[in-house]
Length: 249
Length: 252
Image (cartoon, rainbow over all chains, first blue to last red; front, top):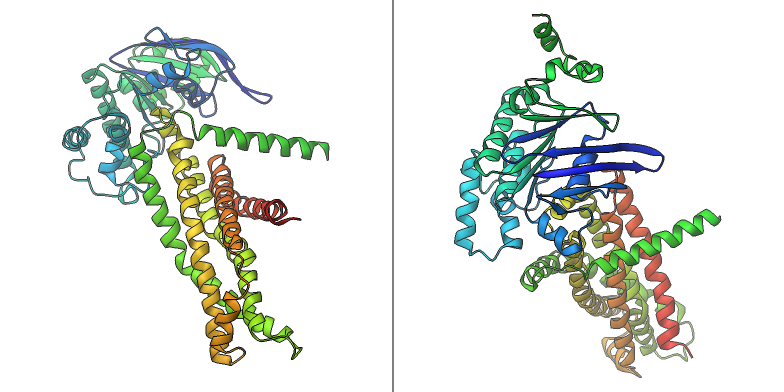
Protein backbone atom coordinates (compact mmCIF):
# COMPACT_ATOMS: atom_id res chain seq x y z
CA UNK A 1 0.00 0.00 0.00
CA UNK A 2 1.19 3.49 -0.84
CA UNK A 3 -0.07 6.53 0.99
CA UNK A 4 0.50 10.14 -0.04
CA UNK A 5 -0.22 12.89 2.46
CA UNK A 6 -0.68 16.59 1.61
CA UNK A 7 1.64 16.65 -1.42
CA UNK A 8 2.30 20.11 -2.87
CA UNK A 9 4.64 21.05 -5.67
CA UNK A 10 5.41 24.28 -7.51
CA UNK A 11 7.80 25.07 -10.34
CA UNK A 12 8.73 28.73 -9.96
CA UNK A 13 5.45 30.68 -9.75
CA UNK A 14 3.40 27.82 -11.15
CA UNK A 15 1.66 25.64 -8.59
CA UNK A 16 1.31 22.15 -10.02
CA UNK A 17 0.01 20.17 -7.03
CA UNK A 18 -1.95 21.51 -4.07
CA UNK A 19 -2.34 19.41 -0.94
CA UNK A 20 -3.00 16.07 -2.65
CA UNK A 21 -3.62 13.07 -0.40
CA UNK A 22 -4.65 9.54 -1.20
CA UNK A 23 -4.22 5.85 -0.54
CA UNK A 24 -3.26 3.33 -3.24
CA UNK A 25 -4.16 -0.25 -2.43
CA UNK A 26 -2.34 -3.49 -3.07
CA UNK A 27 -3.26 -6.07 -5.71
CA UNK A 28 -5.32 -3.90 -8.02
CA UNK A 29 -4.71 -0.98 -10.39
CA UNK A 30 -5.11 2.43 -8.77
CA UNK A 31 -5.79 5.06 -11.40
CA UNK A 32 -4.81 8.72 -11.29
CA UNK A 33 -6.93 10.46 -13.90
CA UNK A 34 -7.41 14.00 -15.13
CA UNK A 35 -7.09 16.18 -18.20
CA UNK A 36 -3.67 16.95 -19.72
CA UNK A 37 -1.58 19.41 -17.68
CA UNK A 38 -3.40 18.86 -14.38
CA UNK A 39 -0.36 17.45 -12.57
CA UNK A 40 -0.95 13.67 -12.80
CA UNK A 41 2.53 12.86 -14.08
CA UNK A 42 4.14 15.26 -11.57
CA UNK A 43 2.26 13.47 -8.77
CA UNK A 44 3.55 10.13 -10.06
CA UNK A 45 7.10 11.50 -10.30
CA UNK A 46 6.79 12.78 -6.71
CA UNK A 47 5.67 9.33 -5.58
CA UNK A 48 8.64 7.55 -7.23
CA UNK A 49 11.06 10.27 -6.13
CA UNK A 50 11.99 11.71 -9.52
CA UNK A 51 10.58 15.06 -8.36
CA UNK A 52 10.96 16.26 -4.78
CA UNK A 53 7.66 17.58 -3.39
CA UNK A 54 7.73 20.97 -1.65
CA UNK A 55 5.48 19.63 1.05
CA UNK A 56 3.92 16.39 2.22
CA UNK A 57 4.84 12.78 2.88
CA UNK A 58 4.88 9.55 0.90
CA UNK A 59 4.70 6.19 2.64
CA UNK A 60 5.47 2.83 1.04
CA UNK A 61 3.91 0.22 3.33
CA UNK A 62 4.38 2.61 6.25
CA UNK A 63 8.03 3.35 5.31
CA UNK A 64 8.50 7.08 4.96
CA UNK A 65 9.97 7.59 1.49
CA UNK A 66 10.03 11.38 1.36
CA UNK A 67 11.81 11.78 4.70
CA UNK A 68 13.84 8.58 4.55
CA UNK A 69 17.63 8.51 4.39
CA UNK A 70 19.48 7.61 1.19
CA UNK A 71 19.66 3.90 1.98
CA UNK A 72 15.91 3.67 2.69
CA UNK A 73 15.16 5.44 -0.58
CA UNK A 74 17.44 3.11 -2.55
CA UNK A 75 15.92 0.08 -0.81
CA UNK A 76 12.39 1.22 -1.70
CA UNK A 77 13.37 2.14 -5.24
CA UNK A 78 14.74 -1.32 -5.82
CA UNK A 79 11.22 -2.63 -5.10
CA UNK A 80 9.75 -0.39 -7.80
CA UNK A 81 9.00 -1.20 -11.42
CA UNK A 82 7.97 1.59 -13.75
CA UNK A 83 6.55 1.75 -17.23
CA UNK A 84 7.29 5.09 -18.86
CA UNK A 85 5.13 6.89 -21.40
CA UNK A 86 7.53 6.21 -24.28
CA UNK A 87 8.78 2.89 -22.91
CA UNK A 88 12.21 4.40 -22.00
CA UNK A 89 13.99 1.35 -23.37
CA UNK A 90 17.77 1.63 -23.63
CA UNK A 91 18.48 2.24 -27.33
CA UNK A 92 21.84 0.47 -27.31
CA UNK A 93 20.47 -2.76 -25.84
CA UNK A 94 18.22 -5.35 -27.43
CA UNK A 95 14.94 -6.54 -25.89
CA UNK A 96 16.58 -9.29 -23.86
CA UNK A 97 19.33 -7.00 -22.52
CA UNK A 98 16.76 -4.32 -21.67
CA UNK A 99 14.64 -6.74 -19.67
CA UNK A 100 17.70 -8.36 -18.05
CA UNK A 101 19.23 -4.99 -17.10
CA UNK A 102 17.72 -4.63 -13.58
CA UNK A 103 18.81 -8.21 -12.79
CA UNK A 104 22.35 -7.57 -14.08
CA UNK A 105 22.74 -4.51 -11.89
CA UNK A 106 20.71 -5.31 -8.81
CA UNK A 107 20.91 -9.06 -8.24
CA UNK A 108 23.64 -11.68 -7.79
CA UNK A 109 21.70 -14.19 -9.98
CA UNK A 110 23.58 -16.43 -12.41
CA UNK A 111 23.24 -15.84 -16.16
CA UNK A 112 20.99 -18.91 -16.54
CA UNK A 113 18.71 -17.80 -13.70
CA UNK A 114 18.48 -14.34 -15.20
CA UNK A 115 17.64 -15.68 -18.64
CA UNK A 116 14.94 -17.94 -17.20
CA UNK A 117 13.36 -14.94 -15.53
CA UNK A 118 13.72 -12.75 -18.66
CA UNK A 119 12.12 -15.42 -20.86
CA UNK A 120 9.31 -15.90 -18.34
CA UNK A 121 8.57 -12.16 -18.30
CA UNK A 122 8.74 -11.83 -22.07
CA UNK A 123 6.38 -14.79 -22.44
CA UNK A 124 4.05 -13.25 -19.87
CA UNK A 125 3.75 -10.08 -21.98
CA UNK A 126 3.41 -12.07 -25.22
CA UNK A 127 6.84 -11.39 -26.70
CA UNK A 128 8.55 -14.75 -26.51
CA UNK A 129 10.29 -14.43 -29.90
CA UNK A 130 11.53 -10.86 -29.67
CA UNK A 131 14.68 -11.40 -27.56
CA UNK A 132 17.19 -10.16 -30.10
CA UNK A 133 15.18 -7.26 -31.53
CA UNK A 134 16.43 -3.70 -30.99
CA UNK A 135 14.02 -1.06 -29.63
CA UNK A 136 14.06 0.73 -33.01
CA UNK A 137 12.57 -2.41 -34.59
CA UNK A 138 9.58 -2.51 -32.21
CA UNK A 139 6.09 -1.05 -32.62
CA UNK A 140 4.67 1.28 -29.95
CA UNK A 141 2.67 -1.55 -28.35
CA UNK A 142 5.66 -3.88 -28.32
CA UNK A 143 7.82 -1.20 -26.67
CA UNK A 144 5.20 -0.83 -23.94
CA UNK A 145 5.12 -4.58 -23.42
CA UNK A 146 8.92 -4.77 -23.21
CA UNK A 147 8.71 -1.85 -20.75
CA UNK A 148 6.25 -3.86 -18.64
CA UNK A 149 8.46 -6.95 -18.81
CA UNK A 150 11.45 -4.88 -17.62
CA UNK A 151 9.31 -3.34 -14.86
CA UNK A 152 8.21 -6.71 -13.45
CA UNK A 153 11.42 -8.70 -14.01
CA UNK A 154 12.78 -7.95 -10.53
CA UNK A 155 9.53 -9.00 -8.79
CA UNK A 156 8.64 -5.46 -7.69
CA UNK A 157 6.22 -4.72 -4.89
CA UNK A 158 5.14 -1.50 -6.60
CA UNK A 159 4.35 -0.92 -10.27
CA UNK A 160 3.92 2.53 -11.78
CA UNK A 161 2.61 3.17 -15.28
CA UNK A 162 2.70 6.63 -16.85
CA UNK A 163 0.03 6.77 -19.56
CA UNK A 164 0.57 3.14 -20.59
CA UNK A 165 -1.71 3.34 -23.62
CA UNK A 166 -0.88 6.75 -25.06
CA UNK A 167 -0.23 6.53 -28.79
CA UNK A 168 -1.66 3.02 -29.05
CA UNK A 169 -4.68 1.78 -31.02
CA UNK A 170 -7.78 0.94 -28.92
CA UNK A 171 -7.30 -2.81 -29.23
CA UNK A 172 -3.66 -2.73 -28.09
CA UNK A 173 -4.61 -0.27 -25.32
CA UNK A 174 -7.11 -2.77 -23.94
CA UNK A 175 -4.49 -5.54 -24.10
CA UNK A 176 -1.99 -3.40 -22.16
CA UNK A 177 -4.64 -2.44 -19.58
CA UNK A 178 -5.64 -6.07 -19.08
CA UNK A 179 -2.01 -7.08 -18.77
CA UNK A 180 -1.43 -4.48 -16.05
CA UNK A 181 -4.60 -5.57 -14.27
CA UNK A 182 -3.66 -9.26 -14.42
CA UNK A 183 -0.06 -8.66 -13.33
CA UNK A 184 -1.13 -6.50 -10.36
CA UNK A 185 -3.31 -9.32 -9.09
CA UNK A 186 -0.89 -12.13 -9.98
CA UNK A 187 2.17 -10.55 -8.33
CA UNK A 188 0.18 -8.77 -5.58
CA UNK A 189 1.71 -5.42 -6.48
CA UNK A 190 0.54 -1.95 -5.54
CA UNK A 191 -0.04 -0.53 -9.00
CA UNK A 192 -0.56 3.11 -9.88
CA UNK A 193 -1.59 4.01 -13.42
CA UNK A 194 -1.69 7.58 -14.69
CA UNK A 195 -4.11 7.93 -17.57
CA UNK A 196 -6.63 10.17 -19.26
CA UNK A 197 -8.10 7.35 -21.31
CA UNK A 198 -11.72 6.63 -20.42
CA UNK A 199 -11.49 3.09 -21.83
CA UNK A 200 -8.83 2.36 -19.20
CA UNK A 201 -10.91 4.03 -16.51
CA UNK A 202 -13.98 1.96 -17.30
CA UNK A 203 -11.92 -1.18 -17.88
CA UNK A 204 -9.56 -1.41 -14.92
CA UNK A 205 -10.55 1.49 -12.63
CA UNK A 206 -10.95 -0.41 -9.37
CA UNK A 207 -9.83 2.65 -7.49
CA UNK A 208 -9.68 6.10 -9.08
CA UNK A 209 -8.30 9.44 -7.98
CA UNK A 210 -9.37 12.45 -10.05
CA UNK A 211 -6.97 15.40 -10.24
CA UNK A 212 -8.16 18.79 -11.41
CA UNK A 213 -5.85 21.81 -11.60
CA UNK A 214 -3.41 20.18 -9.17
CA UNK A 215 -6.03 19.25 -6.57
CA UNK A 216 -7.71 15.98 -5.77
CA UNK A 217 -11.39 16.56 -6.48
CA UNK A 218 -12.77 13.06 -6.25
CA UNK A 219 -11.92 9.49 -5.24
CA UNK A 220 -13.95 6.41 -6.10
CA UNK A 221 -14.32 3.45 -8.48
CA UNK A 222 -15.42 2.88 -12.07
CA UNK A 223 -18.91 2.01 -10.78
CA UNK A 224 -19.40 5.36 -9.07
CA UNK A 225 -17.53 7.64 -11.50
CA UNK A 226 -20.52 8.22 -13.80
CA UNK A 227 -22.69 9.64 -11.01
CA UNK A 228 -20.16 11.46 -8.87
CA UNK A 229 -21.98 14.77 -8.87
CA UNK A 230 -18.69 16.60 -9.41
CA UNK A 231 -19.08 18.93 -12.40
CA UNK A 232 -15.39 18.93 -13.37
CA UNK A 233 -15.31 15.11 -13.30
CA UNK A 234 -18.52 14.88 -15.32
CA UNK A 235 -17.01 17.23 -17.92
CA UNK A 236 -13.98 14.90 -18.11
CA UNK A 237 -15.91 11.62 -18.13
CA UNK A 238 -18.60 12.68 -20.56
CA UNK A 239 -16.34 14.56 -22.94
CA UNK A 240 -16.86 12.09 -25.78
CA UNK A 241 -20.10 11.29 -27.59
CA UNK A 242 -20.19 7.60 -26.64
CA UNK A 243 -20.09 8.38 -22.93
CA UNK A 244 -22.68 11.14 -23.38
CA UNK A 245 -25.04 8.76 -25.20
CA UNK A 246 -24.59 6.20 -22.42
CA UNK A 247 -25.58 8.82 -19.86
CA UNK A 248 -28.70 9.71 -21.87
CA UNK A 249 -29.72 6.03 -21.97
CA UNK B 1 25.77 41.75 -15.75
CA UNK B 2 25.39 40.76 -12.08
CA UNK B 3 22.77 38.20 -13.14
CA UNK B 4 25.25 36.74 -15.63
CA UNK B 5 27.91 36.27 -12.93
CA UNK B 6 25.34 34.79 -10.53
CA UNK B 7 24.15 32.25 -13.09
CA UNK B 8 27.75 31.42 -14.01
CA UNK B 9 28.64 30.78 -10.34
CA UNK B 10 25.46 28.69 -9.96
CA UNK B 11 26.40 26.68 -13.05
CA UNK B 12 29.93 26.05 -11.75
CA UNK B 13 28.50 24.98 -8.36
CA UNK B 14 26.07 22.62 -10.09
CA UNK B 15 28.96 21.17 -12.12
CA UNK B 16 30.98 20.42 -8.96
CA UNK B 17 27.93 18.79 -7.30
CA UNK B 18 27.57 16.72 -10.48
CA UNK B 19 31.21 15.66 -10.19
CA UNK B 20 30.63 14.78 -6.50
CA UNK B 21 27.74 12.46 -7.46
CA UNK B 22 30.13 10.40 -9.59
CA UNK B 23 31.60 8.88 -6.47
CA UNK B 24 28.50 8.29 -4.32
CA UNK B 25 26.34 5.15 -4.36
CA UNK B 26 28.48 3.45 -7.00
CA UNK B 27 27.70 0.10 -8.61
CA UNK B 28 29.99 -2.95 -8.51
CA UNK B 29 33.53 -2.87 -9.93
CA UNK B 30 32.51 -5.50 -12.52
CA UNK B 31 29.79 -3.22 -13.88
CA UNK B 32 32.22 -0.34 -14.36
CA UNK B 33 34.94 -2.57 -15.80
CA UNK B 34 32.65 -3.64 -18.66
CA UNK B 35 31.35 -0.13 -19.25
CA UNK B 36 34.85 1.40 -19.24
CA UNK B 37 35.99 -1.16 -21.81
CA UNK B 38 32.99 -0.40 -24.05
CA UNK B 39 33.55 3.35 -23.74
CA UNK B 40 37.29 2.98 -24.37
CA UNK B 41 36.64 1.15 -27.62
CA UNK B 42 34.10 3.74 -28.69
CA UNK B 43 36.30 6.71 -27.71
CA UNK B 44 39.73 5.32 -28.62
CA UNK B 45 39.18 3.26 -31.75
CA UNK B 46 36.40 5.59 -32.90
CA UNK B 47 38.69 8.64 -32.82
CA UNK B 48 41.84 7.01 -34.15
CA UNK B 49 41.34 7.72 -37.87
CA UNK B 50 40.41 11.37 -37.37
CA UNK B 51 43.27 12.00 -34.92
CA UNK B 52 45.81 10.29 -37.21
CA UNK B 53 44.60 12.16 -40.28
CA UNK B 54 44.55 15.60 -38.63
CA UNK B 55 47.88 15.18 -36.88
CA UNK B 56 49.69 13.85 -39.99
CA UNK B 57 48.63 16.91 -41.99
CA UNK B 58 49.35 19.17 -39.03
CA UNK B 59 52.94 17.87 -38.89
CA UNK B 60 53.33 18.17 -42.66
CA UNK B 61 52.04 21.74 -42.76
CA UNK B 62 54.15 22.78 -39.74
CA UNK B 63 57.27 21.45 -41.48
CA UNK B 64 56.52 23.33 -44.72
CA UNK B 65 55.69 26.58 -42.92
CA UNK B 66 58.72 26.39 -40.62
CA UNK B 67 60.99 25.78 -43.61
CA UNK B 68 59.37 28.73 -45.41
CA UNK B 69 60.29 31.01 -42.48
CA UNK B 70 63.91 29.78 -42.26
CA UNK B 71 65.33 32.33 -44.67
CA UNK B 72 68.82 32.68 -43.19
CA UNK B 73 71.47 30.32 -44.63
CA UNK B 74 73.17 30.42 -41.23
CA UNK B 75 70.39 28.38 -39.60
CA UNK B 76 70.94 24.67 -40.12
CA UNK B 77 68.13 22.57 -41.67
CA UNK B 78 67.71 20.34 -38.63
CA UNK B 79 66.25 23.34 -36.74
CA UNK B 80 63.10 22.83 -38.83
CA UNK B 81 62.38 19.41 -37.33
CA UNK B 82 63.42 20.69 -33.90
CA UNK B 83 60.73 23.38 -34.16
CA UNK B 84 58.23 20.83 -35.45
CA UNK B 85 59.04 18.54 -32.51
CA UNK B 86 58.64 21.24 -29.86
CA UNK B 87 55.42 22.63 -31.42
CA UNK B 88 53.94 19.17 -31.79
CA UNK B 89 54.81 17.79 -28.38
CA UNK B 90 54.08 20.94 -26.40
CA UNK B 91 51.00 22.26 -28.13
CA UNK B 92 49.67 20.71 -31.32
CA UNK B 93 49.30 17.10 -30.19
CA UNK B 94 47.71 17.67 -26.75
CA UNK B 95 45.81 20.94 -27.29
CA UNK B 96 44.72 21.12 -30.93
CA UNK B 97 43.75 17.44 -30.86
CA UNK B 98 41.77 18.23 -27.66
CA UNK B 99 39.71 20.73 -29.63
CA UNK B 100 39.01 18.08 -32.28
CA UNK B 101 38.36 15.52 -29.52
CA UNK B 102 35.82 17.88 -27.94
CA UNK B 103 34.09 18.22 -31.30
CA UNK B 104 33.91 14.50 -31.92
CA UNK B 105 33.74 12.74 -28.55
CA UNK B 106 32.35 15.60 -26.43
CA UNK B 107 29.41 16.31 -28.74
CA UNK B 108 28.68 12.59 -29.00
CA UNK B 109 28.65 12.24 -25.18
CA UNK B 110 26.37 15.26 -24.75
CA UNK B 111 24.07 14.14 -27.55
CA UNK B 112 23.85 10.59 -26.22
CA UNK B 113 23.11 11.62 -22.64
CA UNK B 114 20.73 14.37 -23.80
CA UNK B 115 18.74 11.86 -25.82
CA UNK B 116 18.67 9.49 -22.87
CA UNK B 117 17.36 12.32 -20.71
CA UNK B 118 14.53 13.41 -23.04
CA UNK B 119 13.44 9.82 -23.69
CA UNK B 120 13.27 9.15 -19.92
CA UNK B 121 16.02 6.51 -20.00
CA UNK B 122 17.88 8.36 -17.23
CA UNK B 123 14.66 8.50 -15.17
CA UNK B 124 14.32 4.74 -15.70
CA UNK B 125 17.77 4.21 -14.17
CA UNK B 126 16.96 6.46 -11.21
CA UNK B 127 13.68 4.66 -10.54
CA UNK B 128 15.59 1.36 -10.43
CA UNK B 129 17.67 2.84 -7.59
CA UNK B 130 20.78 3.27 -9.74
CA UNK B 131 22.90 6.42 -9.43
CA UNK B 132 22.57 7.43 -13.07
CA UNK B 133 25.39 9.99 -12.93
CA UNK B 134 27.86 7.46 -11.62
CA UNK B 135 26.61 4.65 -13.87
CA UNK B 136 26.56 6.67 -17.09
CA UNK B 137 29.24 9.32 -16.65
CA UNK B 138 32.04 7.78 -14.55
CA UNK B 139 32.92 5.13 -17.20
CA UNK B 140 33.03 7.86 -19.87
CA UNK B 141 35.42 9.98 -17.81
CA UNK B 142 37.69 7.04 -16.91
CA UNK B 143 37.74 5.81 -20.51
CA UNK B 144 38.47 9.32 -21.74
CA UNK B 145 41.37 9.74 -19.28
CA UNK B 146 42.80 6.39 -20.37
CA UNK B 147 42.32 6.80 -24.11
CA UNK B 148 43.09 10.46 -24.74
CA UNK B 149 46.77 10.31 -23.64
CA UNK B 150 47.18 7.35 -26.02
CA UNK B 151 45.58 9.36 -28.81
CA UNK B 152 47.96 12.22 -28.03
CA UNK B 153 50.96 9.90 -28.30
CA UNK B 154 49.65 8.59 -31.64
CA UNK B 155 48.99 12.17 -32.77
CA UNK B 156 52.58 13.17 -31.90
CA UNK B 157 54.03 10.21 -33.81
CA UNK B 158 51.78 10.87 -36.82
CA UNK B 159 52.63 14.59 -36.84
CA UNK B 160 56.37 13.93 -36.73
CA UNK B 161 55.88 11.23 -39.39
CA UNK B 162 53.91 13.67 -41.55
CA UNK B 163 56.77 16.16 -41.31
CA UNK B 164 59.28 13.45 -42.24
CA UNK B 165 57.28 12.39 -45.31
CA UNK B 166 56.76 15.95 -46.55
CA UNK B 167 60.48 16.68 -46.07
CA UNK B 168 61.34 13.58 -48.05
CA UNK B 169 58.86 14.26 -50.88
CA UNK B 170 59.57 17.98 -51.31
CA UNK B 171 63.29 17.92 -50.37
CA UNK B 172 62.82 20.76 -47.87
CA UNK B 173 64.91 18.80 -45.39
CA UNK B 174 66.86 15.58 -45.78
CA UNK B 175 65.70 12.54 -43.74
CA UNK B 176 69.01 12.56 -41.89
CA UNK B 177 68.69 16.21 -40.86
CA UNK B 178 65.04 15.69 -39.91
CA UNK B 179 65.81 12.77 -37.57
CA UNK B 180 68.87 14.60 -36.17
CA UNK B 181 66.73 17.70 -35.43
CA UNK B 182 64.08 15.63 -33.70
CA UNK B 183 66.70 14.05 -31.41
CA UNK B 184 68.84 17.16 -30.91
CA UNK B 185 68.66 18.84 -27.50
CA UNK B 186 65.57 16.87 -26.48
CA UNK B 187 64.05 17.61 -23.09
CA UNK B 188 62.08 14.55 -21.86
CA UNK B 189 59.97 16.69 -19.55
CA UNK B 190 58.04 18.00 -22.58
CA UNK B 191 56.55 14.51 -23.01
CA UNK B 192 55.59 14.36 -19.33
CA UNK B 193 54.07 17.83 -19.66
CA UNK B 194 52.08 16.79 -22.76
CA UNK B 195 50.75 13.69 -20.99
CA UNK B 196 49.76 15.67 -17.88
CA UNK B 197 47.91 18.11 -20.13
CA UNK B 198 46.21 15.29 -22.01
CA UNK B 199 44.85 13.70 -18.80
CA UNK B 200 43.50 17.08 -17.62
CA UNK B 201 41.96 17.86 -21.03
CA UNK B 202 40.40 14.40 -21.24
CA UNK B 203 38.77 14.90 -17.83
CA UNK B 204 37.51 18.35 -18.74
CA UNK B 205 36.06 17.38 -22.13
CA UNK B 206 34.35 14.23 -20.81
CA UNK B 207 32.98 15.79 -17.62
CA UNK B 208 31.76 19.06 -19.16
CA UNK B 209 30.17 17.31 -22.14
CA UNK B 210 28.49 14.75 -19.89
CA UNK B 211 27.27 17.52 -17.58
CA UNK B 212 25.75 19.43 -20.48
CA UNK B 213 24.09 16.30 -21.87
CA UNK B 214 22.86 15.03 -18.53
CA UNK B 215 20.96 18.20 -17.68
CA UNK B 216 19.31 18.61 -21.11
CA UNK B 217 15.68 19.65 -20.85
CA UNK B 218 13.16 19.71 -23.67
CA UNK B 219 13.34 17.92 -27.00
CA UNK B 220 15.54 17.26 -30.02
CA UNK B 221 16.36 20.95 -30.48
CA UNK B 222 17.68 21.19 -26.91
CA UNK B 223 19.81 18.07 -27.43
CA UNK B 224 21.46 19.88 -30.34
CA UNK B 225 21.96 22.98 -28.21
CA UNK B 226 23.50 20.87 -25.42
CA UNK B 227 25.93 19.28 -27.87
CA UNK B 228 26.99 22.69 -29.16
CA UNK B 229 27.39 24.06 -25.63
CA UNK B 230 29.35 20.96 -24.65
CA UNK B 231 31.88 21.60 -27.41
CA UNK B 232 32.11 25.36 -26.78
CA UNK B 233 32.50 25.03 -23.01
CA UNK B 234 34.96 22.15 -23.31
CA UNK B 235 37.15 24.09 -25.73
CA UNK B 236 37.15 27.16 -23.45
CA UNK B 237 38.03 24.98 -20.44
CA UNK B 238 40.81 23.27 -22.42
CA UNK B 239 42.35 26.58 -23.51
CA UNK B 240 42.17 28.14 -20.03
CA UNK B 241 43.66 25.05 -18.39
CA UNK B 242 46.31 24.90 -21.13
CA UNK B 243 47.51 28.34 -20.10
CA UNK B 244 47.31 27.55 -16.37
CA UNK B 245 49.25 24.30 -16.76
CA UNK B 246 51.90 25.97 -18.90
CA UNK B 247 52.30 28.70 -16.29
CA UNK B 248 52.34 26.17 -13.46
CA UNK B 249 54.69 23.59 -14.95
CA UNK B 250 56.84 25.58 -17.38
CA UNK B 251 56.61 29.15 -16.04
CA UNK B 252 59.76 30.79 -14.71
